[in-house]
Image (cartoon, rainbow, N blue to C red; front, side, top):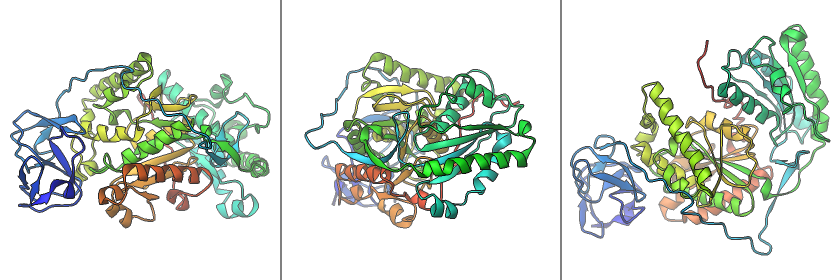
Length: 515
């Protein structure tokens, strides 16, 4: 008889299921501490086994929380997954500011710094890019042609302090609807233009679109130039006289910016200047056990240093949001979060859809069954710090501490919102093997299991699977992630940067009908 903790993890004493560390064969007998459990069928790593008998309709718990309900009788030793675990409406009791755990103050000599690029607005960058920004899809090709005139080989040779010239293109901007759809796109593009990792930019429109460059400038967000900031260049293809004339004008503007950007060097910066994006993609059954809670440790460490850490993906905290409202510093902050949850419930009904369409097929193959289960694991990325702010999509992140941003769960769209809000470094956990990059912010990838890390070493920056292997604790891996965040903020290139990823992942959230 094998001890249960040798082959599986039980996260809470009240849990009805355990998660397997490795695949297991039928007939294996496990000592649960409450008696023998015989494995009913071969079950893969990352999947769940019942450790007690459950009646039809009974709630099934993992993390000490309900993740679904038994579709029929489930016996101890049975594989628990989509065939016998279903989602039902779950009544959640919302409490506000009842579980606030303040971060301990820094002791003498504990304050840390990173080497970053000081910006005139008081922020600091972890990278130093120039941006060519399309205000509308009609100018996307022109923006890419401008970027192509500045190959990396030339920049490394002549402007070594410039990380690159980036083209930010998207599929919207023409008949974008008034109200929040229009305001959201404005926040996204303003966020790129004003990003701490962007020294200067050129913005290109067509001229007849609904989302006008002049509209972005009208409210002063882009026309307010601070001392030391380079003046941006705004171009419209129709006004310039066509594609080639616009390319030539934009190239000339970038050529003027390059020597000024190259003159900016890294200097010591407080960790208060770091804004960390927390995201996960291609999750598996180990995500909520290894990489996500370890990232939560790193998140808390940054918040304790006075920095900022931002959780997102509203559909992927669904069913676990009551745990965040308890951490909200005020009732108002908690209620802001609930309003976003209610919006998403209404939104999916418009399309006859269900939020439980998430988890994805890959999530389910990796062992995740319901959105409640996925959300409880995803929430672990946010550590234990108090929730101090809730932001709209791509809204400027302007307060230190732990925060939440309303974004979809689709990785490129979620990370675009976080980056445009001002995140200057990101950590992305994955159990299935996401290869995401998110220029202009570097993105650190953390594998949830050692099998994945060994299989995709060229893409994974860190391995959190050592927690399952028993060679490191969650706290030890969390400290490694925190140190990697500092190293990347200092200029260390991530695996996605080394492979040139991040140019195509800019994906603004597009709301409203398309005419």
